[in-house]
Image (cartoon, rainbow, N blue to C red; front, side):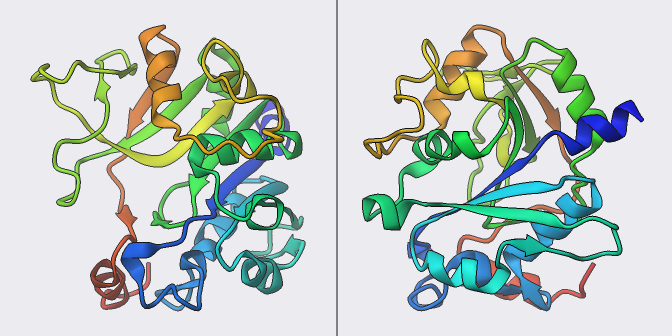
Length: 255
């Protein structure tokens, strides 16, 4: 019962505001999260996984062609015989500011629609085996961490990686000259709203001015304070960042 309650009280934020410049011309008329991967929109894989994990609320931030995403998915997503719908809300950055706000700016803007703790995932990664496990929510809730990141082995397009990982499961902001291994941030995380307030982040609450800012510097500050955990995920994961990667995924059998 405790596991179920922990899951149901944690919403998700799906980042879907990017222009998808590297995916052009595919994204000239279709937002990247709606591009088909193995028979259905890329974003739908996340919605299915969240619903199957017991999550009941998800917010999608949008900018480029964002009205298409709302039109496609509406305000409720039902699937998988879960017995409960996934309520959808939207943070419309294009409508409010005329542009996307980058990752930290977009999260800060969407915070009023979220809770103290929430899942984060980018809408342009394909990770069909990730389960958004309730056990992870419980462990994170019981910790003092501001974030827990899922890292993946470095793909060919990011050979240097992003963050280190200690044997104790801590994410590390390694100095540039440090030879220790780095791994790639999968764009999946559990986050506390507290991370988006001083001293970690200087964006005003709810980002009323539409400040655009990346997430990595915020995470690095929290890492330096020892408040970011991490896990290494070895399942299938693809950053669907180019037409070639999309074509490779669609050439494989569906999971």
